[in-house]
Length: 199
Image (cartoon, rainbow, N blue to C red; front, side, top):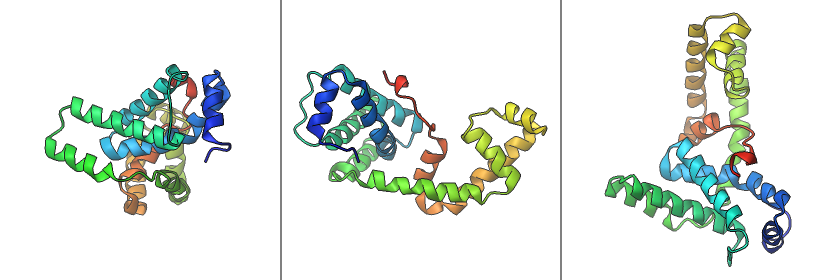
């Protein structure tokens, strides 16, 4: 968790301290995105929700009054934004009620930080991939290369890259099947998210 108390951090943000704001962003971004993903089951939409929350925090930094903890405020903001998004998209009432009610009484958000121990398990699963398959997967997921770029770099066909990526994802899903959707969140989430994308 963040060092220092919330009041000091918030006071720094209100005084336009970009460093304090960035510290909050880096600490909470991924747990908040994972929380939004529980509602929406859609990574881009989840990340958009979280960025909206952070953008509002910065724009309204001198006006916002937080009586609970900063963590509680941020996660509740994400939840409210997700509910608004679901209503806006006119999701079927039964599904909407199910998702909202499932999370209504869950006010302990620490689990979304604890779940990030999953990253170590995913790394272990990736390391267990066959050498060439692992190399292709890392070039795609960690270096962000397109399939054509990977094919050119490794002097193989694009079809081979596609096949190896399909097999890699299948193997990872099987190795980490107990974590279900959270695995896909980690596999597809952007690494090293830049705070500038939010400002």
